[in-house]
Amino acid sequence: MSCPPAADVTASATAEVERHSYDVVVIGAGGAGLRAAIAAREAGKRTAIVCKSLFGKAHTVMAEGGIAASMGNVNSKDNWQVHFRDTMRGGKFLNHFRMAELHAKEAPLRVWELETYGALFDRTKQGRISQRNFGGHEYPRLAHVGDRTGLELIRTLQQKVVSLQQEDFREFGDYEARIKVFHECAITELFKVGPDVDSPIAGAFGYWRETGRFLAFEAPAVVLATGGIGKSFKVTSNSWEYTGDGHALALRAGATLLNMEFVQFHPTGMVWPPSVKGILVTESVRGDGGVLRNSEGKRFMFDYIPDVFRTQYAETEEEGDRWFTDPDNNKRPPELLPRDEVARAINSEVKAGRGSPAGGVFLDVSTRLKAEDIIKKLPSMHHQFKELADVDITKEPMEVGPT
Image (cartoon, rainbow, N blue to C red; front, side, top):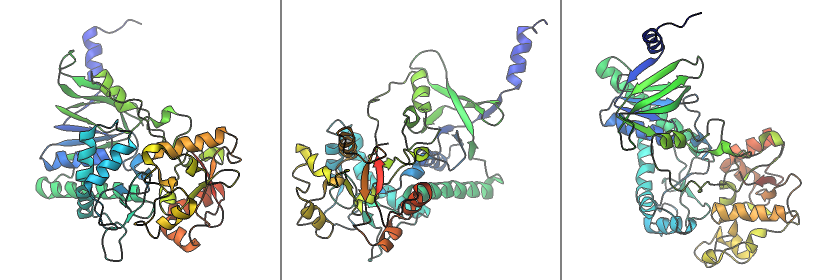
């Protein structure tokens, strides 16, 4: 069989590519991607949101514990400077200081913004947004919705997108006039105006996952918000989508990638049964009083306090326990050290032969809180362990390890 002329091949291929033109294309529909799309749409730009999976299936949902923002609702001593100091110290002063400063300053504004969008945060007795303790934070700082904060964040941002579409329908008679979602669509390449490294971006190319049909987006601005690289690792809390697509797209387009070695390992993920190994166990368990023990029953974190944190953390179990009721006159327990410190400590205990039967350590909240308080504060964790591991966390400890 002879091949058709080159011109015919080109025409045929062109006909098979679905084409769209937008002012801004946002690749990724998690918290970052949706907020970027909202900003673009509010600036009057025609905006496309492209996500590899279903709309709403973002790893932001796994941010269960809360959003760090120095609002000072629980402890009035908190402010952005303390948050900035905690962030820099937790990052071993390797952080990009300007980004850490902006984050500390703007986080309260973003939380209040989410509330104007319709987010329903837990409240204090005074009616303010409640804040809980978390690793590496000097004061209670995490605005939260039980242990399902990420789910509420995604719900809120999705609802904001829908409200903007409703505004467009009233103005143009078309819900997708200025913001449209393309879900189950994988992007494989970015277009550039020319071959040079400094050539401007011109759009993106991808395919529909269901049919394999190609599609191309023409756009002078592309926002990469594709999440992390968690599926590069055998044990991970990440879903199948998180394969570093954005990193690869940026690199192939000529971008410089910074700090690629900074991959966060959360200290507590499920370790048993094997089918659920790596699923996240929120830091809220420790923030609400949970403690880590090795196979000998020892609270081992007291042996792993680095010198840079020693003045901030309790040296005895008694002082650490008193901190939950009297934080002004006691130091916090070392279970609330920054995540990298806790993850390394757990790994060291397991390697030393003091791990749990499934190769982790024990995280116990059952002896620290009443059953009704656990179910109220940690409903997702109670359900998760009961359904997936047949463990009742109100009566027995969990087995956890880094993920």
